[in-house]
Image (cartoon, rainbow, N blue to C red; front, side, top):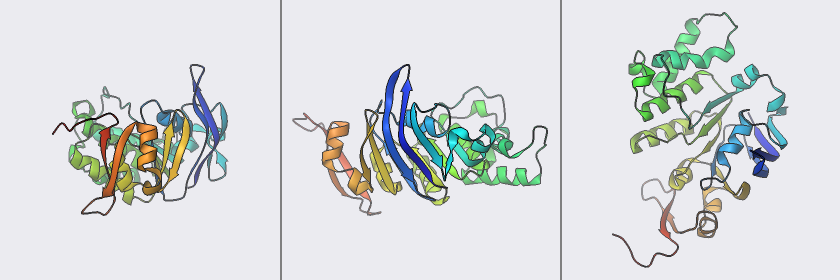
Length: 261
């Protein structure tokens, strides 16, 4: 599945938040959307998964405008995990993940053996199978996030959209989740605050500031000290992770005069 945003602009409460953005994600590619708070990242994602209609421009999945697809067809193609996870579901973990099968079923169709196997596999992939009978409401924030990822996987989407998927996760589960996303082979667009995680796991990055794309390219191309200073207002020193060889960044405030260590 190929995703493309063509000259997309979006507004909230009459204010232009996203401004003529052009962006694409190739089939099977993992692309990160990064930028400071308020830069328009989540707003842009909402235009992709049909929560906010663009004020101008198009969102294309292959050659289809997502806003001309039915809601069911869109849900079959796109799995979404957002920041605003619900906290009051009175369902078990397995029941939550089964909801990912709804776009593939008729109105009154019951779950079959194939559905059960797909749900089990999704729970196994996020290491939550042993929690199947637990109430969703009793889980920690990180556990809830993994269940929502499993629900999206159960949709068997061709496009994966994740808005800050590592929120509420400890470092072990942050890395495990991004390893999973990296290996599933689905076209993926995600937002991340942690620039080192973005550098380690994303094949390409788009840097967004005040609703506009400021830079794009590989982590090395998009996360230069000059771009980081312009967008995030900090000094950055670049290096290489001693184990992975990935780009690694260290930061210091612009006006720091001495260390705090």
